[in-house]
Length: 410
Image (tube, rainbow, N blue to C red; front, side, top):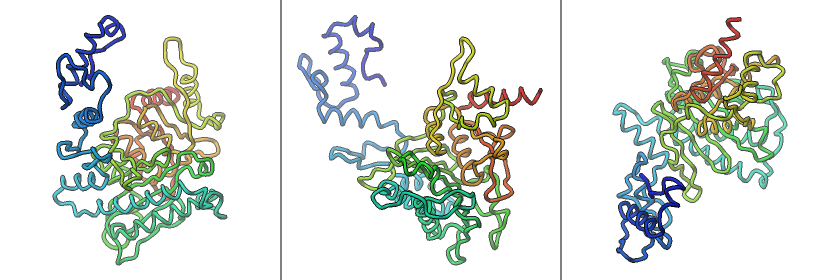
């Protein structure tokens, strides 16, 4: 919907003040409830009144899925019909008559953990939660105090939901089995605090999670734990940055929800997220450039030094997978975490980093690949198995793969 007839500077400059006023008054009159008296100087000319502005906002929001603005009001400074994440999930559940509600309850429990982690991150400096906890995790990485806290929150919230039978966490060497009396049908994998090396310097960090359905009867088996990404039921991440945001997919597209601290709820702000077909940023740790395979080195070189007539790409790299992937989801481009001489199998873990992010990217219209096949087609052999991942905009990933094919032929 066009809000004014000023399609270009040329058009605007060629119109008289009277013509511009009449055009703007006429256009807004069609979408605003306030009266427009011919010959008067209504709110459209002297600046929008509060009532007019609220009417405009309500009209423009009508196309957001899940909102029924005819039953909503923000006259008092708060949206009275906001689409919360809980409400959204319940709405999706209604589309499946056979649904038990277990997944909805599990996601609700995860939201409680995200809110608690978000609060802890924001007051970490005051609560002396920065720094090393004094031990290392199964990956050989130094564990931060916030890592420990976040891990405990995730485990306790999932365990008490009565919907999960087992969990896999980056911080725990072994599978976390739920007591028999509290078991459900889902397996939850998570990195409780991705990018924890950035904690002390206030860089964006996040939580990544994936949800699978148990495949066998009886005790949890390796077959239940080591499923491909294609078998995933839901996946998402929670970003703790300038705002706290959950990006979630249950296999029917991707939606983003921002935490409103005034009411303590995640509100739908990014419905039906789609990755642009092509972006202008590439994201990779160039500190390992000497260890890259030739195919990748040449691809990155052409991003930095494009041929005449072609556009290059700018580098953006945070060092927190959640932050880098989130930017890629919104702006397009490509995120790369390749093999190096030090890590020939890659560094990122399949079950709680690669697979959940690949699930989200594919649901948003992008591509996630190992360089040889789709990330989601892989079946891991260990709960902490590492893998290669290249994900992002369809055209950017396809162009990168063409370099890989070129060196295969040689």
